[in-house]
Length: 232
Image (cartoon, rainbow, N blue to C red; front, side, top):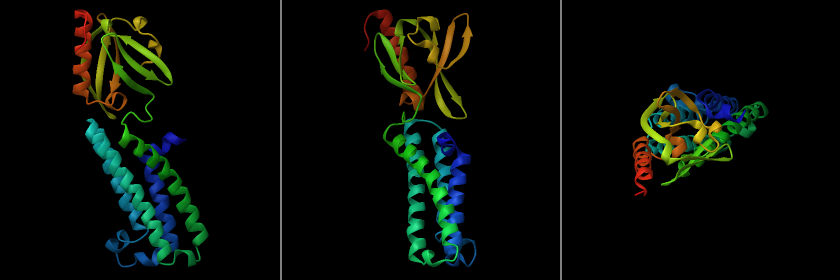
């Protein structure tokens, strides 16, 4: 259920309910056309929703900087919802005949938005936040990962190649290894292909906390160092 409030549909529903709730209690503040509505308590969650979608779009373009920027914009969107609540109370929302209905709708909406806020705040601090796979370290011996609470170690000596990857969720790196059987805890990884050269899994920028180009370079250096006997 929690994951629903982190995707675009769940976030849109949360902000829409927040707006509906404030409209029921402070609609008089929104009279006078579209601009007046936007610049009113029920209009601020609509502005917030626009910021949420903007933030998601920026995050999907990739790079750690843009991932953090997208999350920070979504944090700002949640702050607007709280400002809207304070504003609605200031203009007399508590005296509305629909105050109970309004605050039930608003409460349902802001609860969902709060789930997104906590996630986004964590992403600003560490883009690996909430990821089931997290890159912990790259050394001369292993690529160390934490996968769903379990340690997974990929020996650098079995790395055969890397390639930049991109999908609807952002960017990452395809990692080709000799065989998943050589990976400690390898069954936990997202394997995407098997060829004569070996087997491939994908590691995203969110999971690595690194730009795809930097991740690919560090993996390549680690593989080369494993063969040469030392990691730079």
